[in-house]
Image (tube, rainbow, N blue to C red; front, side):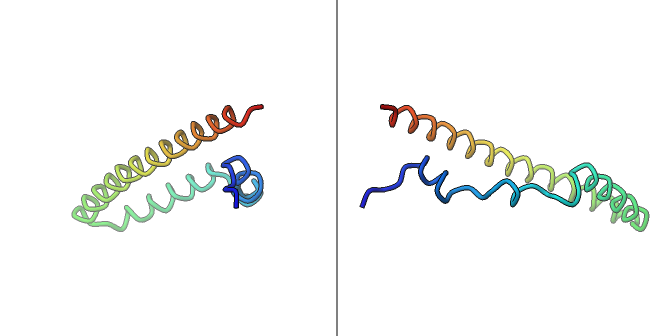
Length: 92
């Protein structure tokens, strides 16, 4: 049996429709505002030691997020290169 190309997988079964990916109820900005409000309320309840610990947690959260975003970016670029190469190879 012939193996499907990346392009065939993409169009036949590989990617969900955009309506399943986008957030419909609220935008990113609205979520960010809610997060800031909740964080401000949370900080008001902290002792000095808890504030310091929370700052360290947020710093580690940012650092791990950057690593994850870099890995996602690299994966996307690699995928783009592969699919572009495949498209050129399949040209008739």
